[in-house]
Amino acid sequence: MRWWLFAVVLMAGCSHGGLMPEKYDGEAFEADGAAVTAYEENNILMTEDLPERFPFTKSTEMAGIQDDTGEEMQLEAGTYDVGTDVPPGRYDVLLQDEAGALVIEDDQGVRLLEIPVGVRTPVAQVDLARGYTLTFASRDGQLAITPVGNDMMEMDGEEYIEIPAGTHTVGTHVPAGEYELLSESLPIMGDDGLPRIYWNPSPMMLGLDEDMEDVKGVPTEMKAGDTIVAEYPVQLKKIE
Image (cartoon, rainbow, N blue to C red):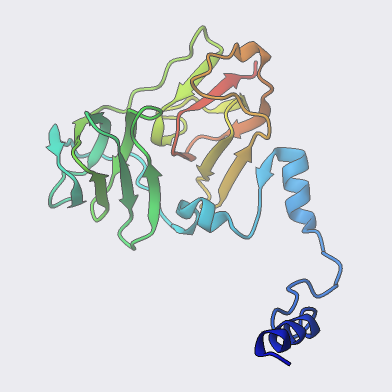
């Protein structure tokens, strides 16, 4: 028998249990009852991969409100230590010229926020605490960061609100209350230290100029002291 024919016979004989064993063991899948209830009743995700999809869930602390006043700065691509290279504070972040990415990590090295700044997110607002690091990745662009106050965001027609990418404290930057989430997700680090990821399976699509009245929202609750952690702008409708 030629060597190649022998190899074919060998592979055929081992296809079901030898060289590539099956991953599925035949046992029935067990649904996570708490996760199913959280999603069905409150539109909240509770899955094992949350720390990978939303890395901030591994952090035990968020920046919140900063008292120090920062200075307007132009940043080249690189990594900056808050408190040494950049004063602590709350900043407007504006990308200039080229696309890039902004990454913020806490003093334990946990990634709190990653924003792909560019066409969809040209502007963000972030809280930078002492000990954090800010990394700006870009080929040729510059990042302008400007200190901002802790002003409350205003409703559009007292009904809709768009939250920019970044970190925002509910009750200080965003009014607390009940909303309908029109965007895909609303990641929140609760004031109690527990994360909540609200999820809309039929979100509005940014940039398509949809009539928001036709977009299906899901009920969402934001409590005073919660921190919103948004990679993209988030659209919400206030529930009266």
